[in-house]
Amino acid sequence: MIKQKTIAGEICIKGKGIHTGYETTLCFKPAEENTGYTFVRTDLPGKPQIPALADNVFDTSRGSSLRNGEAVVRTIEHVLAAVVGCDIDNIIIELDHEETPIIDGSSKHFTEALLKTGIREQNAERKVYEIPTRCYLKDEEKDVEMYLIPDEEYRITTMVDYNSSVLGTQNAKLKNVAEFNEHFSAARTFVFLSEVQALLKHNLIQGGDIKNAIVFVDKILSQDELDYLATVFNQPRVSVLEEGILNNVELNYPNEPARHKTLDVLGDLALVGLRFTGHVMANKPGHKTNVEFAKLIRNKIQETYGNTSLPH
Ligand SMILES: [Zn+2]
Image (cartoon, protein in one colour):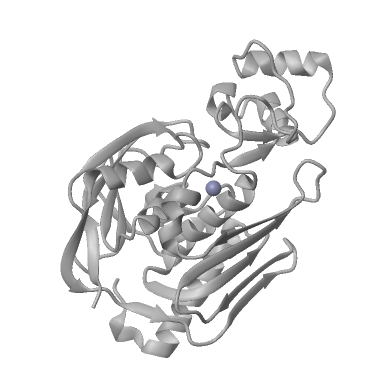
């Protein structure tokens, strides 16, 4: 019998949200058995709780965002990936604003914080639902396909293809969740330079907010443009590295984008709200389909094992 786990103490992390720019403090706290993952907005009257479940997602345009009544929490996927990677069953995640801190665009700082507090075993047994038959989801418009094939482990294989000379086909394989902290948690989010330039032009981001992001250079740059980017990134000189990225960062892994997409899938599928096993194969995944797939898996568990065993 495997027992459920929570964290041994409390720990907080401070930082800005990537989309809203708000400075936010996020605090991890231990939670009771069989309660799962719960966000709490401590800045709102009555401190509303928002269970991390796919049914509570209301927006997947730039990250996955949850709502319960008036209370929202945004960009929850990197935090949840760290929670799953640390093998935690029950946790409270408090926020004093609406968006989680982005820090460096990966899960590493959340993982490190969770491990620092320590993981505590609880008395209740952990239930793990083996998915007995294949699940499949396709989004024609976005050319996304998601499969789950029955397996004794929970694994994720991700394929991306940006059809760009600087970022083409890449794969990443998470053979089991125990690999996550060491090999996936430091995979950062990434953007294409043309997107960054459009956002800068419309004043939608500040250079400082993307100083840690991987920027793929998908166009030829003039010296003027390079000089402008040097000012924005607050660097003496900006150049394009051999891998086709700006020199504000170096890659943590050669296939960092595919690893980051795997991290996003792991974080979004935490919204199933239950432990399960199966081999997930994600072809060009995005938040919208990840969340739909989480609902599909939850429904499959209900069909197979009945409603009575479901928390929340
Ligand atoms: Zn992400």
